[in-house]
Amino acid sequence: MASVIQTNEKQIVSYNPATGDEIGRVQQTSDNDVRAAVARSRDAFHMWKTTSFAQRRALVMKARVVILNELDEIAHLISAESGKPFGEAIAMEIAPVLDLMQHFAKKAERLLKPRRVNIGLYATMGRYSKIVYHPLGVVGIIPAWNYPFSIPLGETVMALMAGNSVVIKPSELTPVVGEKIGDIFEKAGAPANLVQVITGDGRTGAALVDAAPDKIMFTGSVATGKKIAAAASKNLTSVVLELGGKDPMIVFDDANLQLAASAAVWGAFCNSGQSCSSVERLYVQEGAAKQLTKLIVEKTRELKQGAGDAEDISIGAMSSERQLRMVEDHVEDFRRAGAKIEIGGKVLSTGLSRKPPEGGIQNLFYEPTVITGATNEMRAMREETFGPTLPIATFKTEDEAIRLANDSEFGLTASVWTRDYEKGRRVAEQIEAGSVCVNEVLYTHGIGQTPWGGFKNSGRGRTHGAEGLMELVQPQHIHINRFAILPDAWWLPYSPEAVKTFRGFATKFASGSLLRTATLMPQLFRRIRELLKK
Ligand code: NAD
Image (cartoon, rainbow, N blue to C red):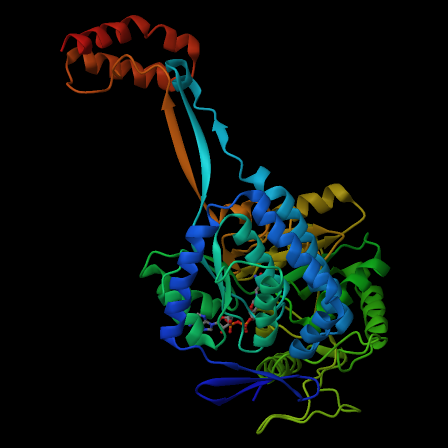
């Protein structure tokens, strides 16, 4: 089954989903070995946390050079193991993560610089506060298979720049790409055990959570996210959960329809629709529906489908049989519910020879599929498909579009298309999703400078951006009294004078007004004098 078969309990064989060729074999790491890896990681952390930002930057920049030197080889590996086109591996994985690497290598020091906090009227008492950021320790990274290089590598770089060590458990569908990340850091000269890769399936992931790292960065399904959150609670391990999506695209009739159609085709079909931020639902205003659908169908017809290593291929194989079955099920649901398949709607029938793994199906190519007449009542409009389908529904008014888009358990990304930027911004702010684009689609995970994460069941916490970096540190508040010659008025013992002062604190000092607080001074001096006499 799938693009991976477990040959025995100790080994995973990874196959190319387009051709059926074996990519490599990795071990199913045992629970004991996972625990040992986390223990080694903790030792590496104690050394790494003492390094300067310049040393961390040097490692990350060397890792970039390794990637640039092996760019085509890495892109072919990503394409071969996941099924995505070779060019897309460069455009959507390697280029964005190289940008993220240079950004955090250069900017982490400034983003994590100790900072003074405005403590209001407490400052008048000669005190000041600052925040310093400490690394957490061992960061466990458990990614999905759909962006097997950029997601775990980006999270690794951010964790390292913050002073943490890392243990990555790649998806069992893309373990060789996972191992490549370890190889890159080794070639870059990373200290021993700073970045470790432990291969295996969900059991290895569960063992990693159980081994109590200091943070879990998880990317995957809602169901697994819930299991991880429950397991992590045993050790109070904090988790960032990057989960599924059912992302809406809203097209108003004043939009540039040519551009919106091209964006919809890319947003729905790149990576065979296996992006958490794929366009999974398109809502078009009634007046533009016919024209937009025509353009989308025409543009879909032009797409060449095949094994991802050829440069003119736009749509590769799906990553696994399980995922293909899900797409078939959803397309069938649309059919049964009365929606119309405008193009696609089946497994590609011609020209592709795959040596299916034992018991597996002949081919994992699903045609890009455009569906009209979809409504939110259909099951396939509510569950994540994660495949090359683009269901189109219509709306009449702005309010209806917002209501339809928000009518989902998910809230990862969304896009709004209109020439009226004010309307675009207004609608964007009413959509319940972690990232909303106006006249753009899907790609903002590629902007490592901006926070990434979901509302509702699409996740908890953030990766990327300053907000994502903050997930990988613990802030420490340092509070200094530079006027440490008098006792504080609130210290023991209490007395009627004390209570009078506390009342003054509540009614004057706590107002935040310097003027009102000034009237408290005589009472404050009486209280301090009283304390000094004790
Ligand atoms: P999955 O939940 O099946 O697996 C994800 C990872 O979790 C794998 O490495 C797997 O081995 C591991 N795992 C499985 N069971 C585990 C357990 N009990 N404890 C610990 N680890 C365990 O998801 P998938 O099929 O690999 O990925 C597809 C999903 O990922 C989709 O829902 C997609 O939307 C989501 N995704 C989200 C984002 C995002 O940024 N929000 C990005 C990419 C993918």
